Image 1 (cartoon, rainbow, N blue to C red):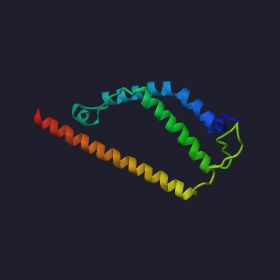
Image 2: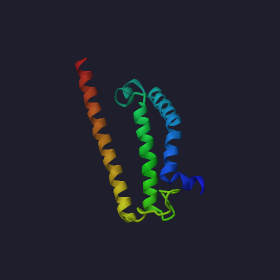
Image 3: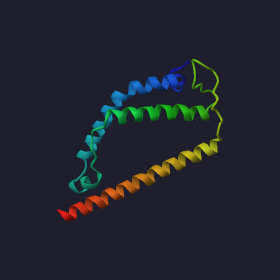
Image 4: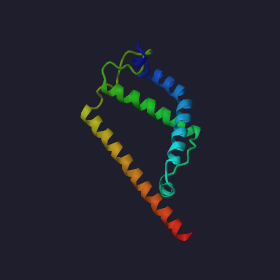
Length: 134
């Protein structure tokens, strides 16, 4: 079994998630610090972020990433064996059509963008209101 095939199993995804949490946590915090240094004072009012990432957030993000990747590939690809080495059966392959899978992925992405836009707008309005009171 190749590394790629192994990483698409639940066991492999778990190992990838465990190994990636620590370096991923460090890299993401560095990128957020860098992001904040590139903002002007005016931009920072709306776009600056706290560069600290909690370990719970890092671990849940890694778990969500590796397991959703393994799940989606198990649905899409006939050759993925998510339960290997315990089983060669892929019971979720084709459980939904590719069209439905792509539509659902697009809808989730658009929903996330809408949530981001509303959150950003609220943050901007709140910052402007606080700035007016100062």
